[in-house]
Amino acid sequence: MTFAATILTLYPEMFPGPLGHSIAGRAKDEGKWSLETLQIRDFATDKHHTVDDTPAGGGAGMVMKADVLGAAVDEALMRQPDAPVLAMSPRGKPLTQARVRQLSTGPGVTILCGRFEGFDERIFEARPVEEVSIGDYILSGGEIGALALLDACIRLLPGVMGAASSGDEESFEQRLLEYPHYTRPKEWEGRTIPEVLRSGDHAKIEAWRKAMAENITRSRRPDLWERYTGAPDQSPSGAQREKLKDE
Ligand code: SAH
Image (cartoon, protein in one colour):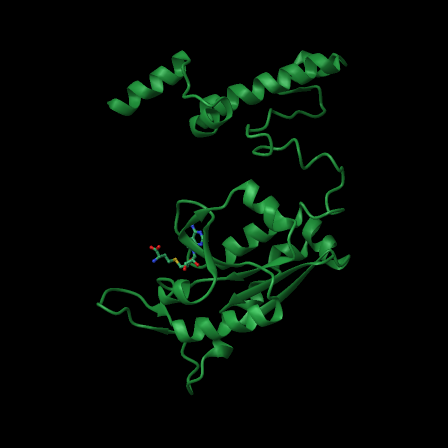
């Protein structure tokens, strides 16, 4: 089955962009996913093909018009009624690996890319559109977010990744950040690869990797650590963080 992506954008020439290369590009050539872009401007009905207007109530910037967005979403829904419609938005639910995995097992995805100040709010009431954020920072448009989301989905499609297992061990799949990697040369600028990784003792290597993943997660991402252990960090470093927060 082909995972079908439909992108609603004012900049269709930005696609597939980086997704035309490497793993995603190869998968596309092999028909494992397909891409269709719809130019939002084509759904404007006035002479000048206006897609945005000034914000009601005043203020800076422009807002994408609900009538134009509605027509574009309707066209996407007609082409792919079963695919969820996601709108890129810093206000959306933060994208997670779990959601990416869920999307990748479905028929595909329709992604609405914002520009300017964003969308007329009524589009979210009038159409089944789910707002998705790729992080707590502001991009100038939804296209890069759409590329990031698609890339994350595509690499999980059956047969896309080289080693079948390499998807499962990565950061977030097991709710921990990943352990450190090393490769030859054995020594570089006086630094050697940890002895245990050269021991050939697979049980020991496994245990070392797990301990490293846990250390890294605990120190870098207390939020993930708390979810992993089911309890706030009680270690001295956790206590220190609490103290720092209070200062
Ligand atoms: N005025 C908005 C930001 C608009 S940025 C606000 O303050 O919330 C313009 C467009 O870029 C948005 O409509 C959205 O499609 C996209 N965008 C910006 N940051 C994003 C993020 N973190 N995640 C997903 N999309 C984002």
